[in-house]
Length: 253
Image (tube, rainbow, N blue to C red; front, top):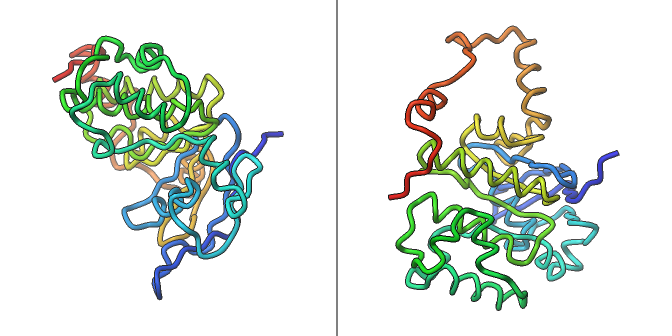
């Protein structure tokens, strides 16, 4: 039986008369990659920010690794890693300096070179954050989520704006992190990304979860209704063609 590391029960979040989250319930299993998908404004970011202890809930319960959000928010913070957007970093500091800064905030002893090697940025240790390409910034952002050796990391649209090579490289990085036993919760607007990475996904719309299962099962259920794609499904897609022709090597700006 799979162990639940996150349990969300009847979660509500209101802003005055507007209810952003309307009674969401779901579980995330230990060691899985779980996707929370939905259009802009659906309530997925609010839901994640509540779990991350960054936003107050209106009602409902959230448990993370057995810790009650209402009782132990500080203990929850110690076991999660949250991906920062680019604006969260001092652009004039180099990567080693930034890692040491965050390690100090977490009160953790970290080897910056070892951490940078995990995300293929060891050769950029002395580069300033503002000098990195888009793909490098995303990889570094993920590296910072690992500083406190978290049980769970949250990745918010980690490949937005990346070229195909950088995108596939980041997929491999995320899968490698999961192989080390870390549970990953990811949001993305790229359905092919969710299909490749996620063991299960929850689709949220209008503040409610409208479907939750593995991508494969959700697709099979749709096909069983008689749905057919207007274009014949092929064994490869245009992104595969692009990478096959141009190579897998990341080309940094």
